[in-house]
Image (cartoon, rainbow, N blue to C red; front, top):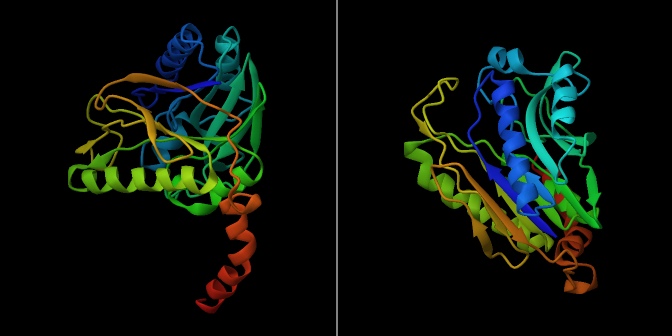
Length: 277
């Protein structure tokens, strides 16, 4: 199975331009015979940090924008994952759509959304394509143990994690080190491939409260042993892919280290958490 990611720059409010980049990315994916490809977090709408701006370009899964996405991508072979600000009634979610051959297979909504205008997702679907089970989390979700663990328990062999990072210069190195450590841990503890699919910012993100940041990219795919097998160039648009072995099995303790740990210590953890209030 060949999986990949399109590290691209999106523009707030430019749905047509962002969709055109998705089409171009899928053309590249088909040329390279990539079977599942990821695009960044909130890519179709852009990702401002103000609720009023986020709502201006947001759309529902039943909207004309979604129908346009499905129509313009129906000719491609690659299954793809792409982010957008989703309207669900009066609520706003940070959501990724999973799409193949003109069909919306499902969605995942960010479970650790830290923008106050985003509702928290609490569903963790697993999808299957050509025999490969995979799941999706979004950006900061990968900094927590449980989201990726839930997907692995459900049989996911790959976790795709679309990102939107725009980091202040002061926090850049710390962020770079921490997310790599988080993603290595998620891959190893669950015996999965972990796809960190970041954006890149080619200029100032004027839609952010502090536009003096850096969207540096650094997308990569970590294998179940914690090795970064392929990574993007930084500070520019890029396309990465990797041939993976979907049959890898975690034989630790007979059930896998993450499941064994949850069974052995999960109740103790709940008791300690309750004691701490």
